[in-house]
Length: 589
Image (cartoon, rainbow, N blue to C red):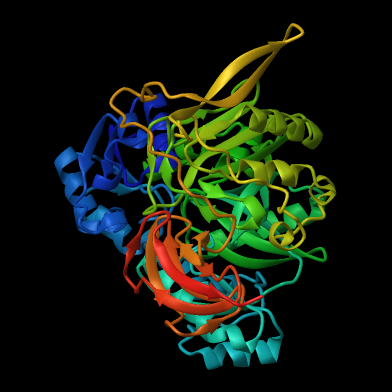
């Protein structure tokens, strides 16, 4: 086993890997950029080294800088986490050339599966059917139109070298092909450093069911069970569970065997996930993620295995030590992601800012993997995942009750979170019955009843007041209420943390309206494209510009019909929440 491991990542996954290393007596080395020098993952590691940060949020993609830290720290292995360099074959190869061990599959396996087109071809060769699609990159919108005409609409444009919903756009008709292709290419380039995309048929009501696999260099390979990840927004997972509800055992075995066959056919080693779409009692290969998945805790809860420990042992050359018949799965586990997003109205707008208050749940069979504490800053430069809350129950009903309790205990202030949306999902009949799909949250649920997140405690009000929680008693019963009271000094929630900012303007969708037709930025971000000019007439809902925040593109739309009298932004401009974007003179009447 290794004596020192460098964790080439940040946030909750870096904290999670550091904890397993500590359990195993392995020293850890963290890396950080200037944007998150005081983050929890830095405090969780035994050593931490700065990465050159003139690239902003791209510092973690700087292979040379990470390798320089490997040499300086004396780390014997590098764990990439997920995202960033985790599926970068060149990085895995460079780590080996530097004399360290990459905790993941061989570079050749990453190259095969890292390209979604290559993965489709490998799956076909292994006898695993994929979603109908093209096996070559797309260069022109006319190719999207031709594919949609031949196979039917809608069509999914997907990043060839990525995952997690980044660089994926759904095109519903020929008119949207050009803009969707350009947007997918921009997102793919920003998130993965490559802009190649390909096409797939977008299935109408599928479930996303994936299979966890593990394989060693000695020829052993097993499947550890499936996870249903069908509750998604923006093609990114929000709720994951195992076992998949209503999933037949015979189909589970067939899927597991198909995943292992693909694993063996590609010479794969270490932990990985084979993703499928499940519809009408059939499954179709989607892609293989050659890394640890965000949702791996639910598999750990039902199997009793530590997948990070398994990764480290396999990377160190140890045999898997687990035959297929020895894999045991017990009970039911459900996980939800807590992202810094405003779900009101179903918008899921990124919500960067400083966390002024934070209480994570605890208690029997509740697990929290968090990357943030009170006082930490959620910047617009990185993925906005704050934490994962996972629960275990003897059956699905028990797990659902426990997750409801855990979410009720969760308190995050200073930024909006996806918790209210998850709570709403848990109460739907379709989710309880397991008849939901990957399109359920965005197309079948009404999130209009969700209110914007309340102001954080300490937010200034009018006439020298500030928001506080106070206790009151009515007929001997105790209540806790929020009131604006006379302002008093506000103490930072963590020693050394800067004070909380004043309250921020929020918007449920599109652009916030500051009054008199002024459209302002609903979040921090960077303008990537402007769609209108001064003097142009626009309809309500028309896209004025595209604002990139947290690696996702967000259209800012006109709140009403009228004429654009002023445009204050250009591509490349960095905006803060509330900055003026445009002025629209509403239609008379």
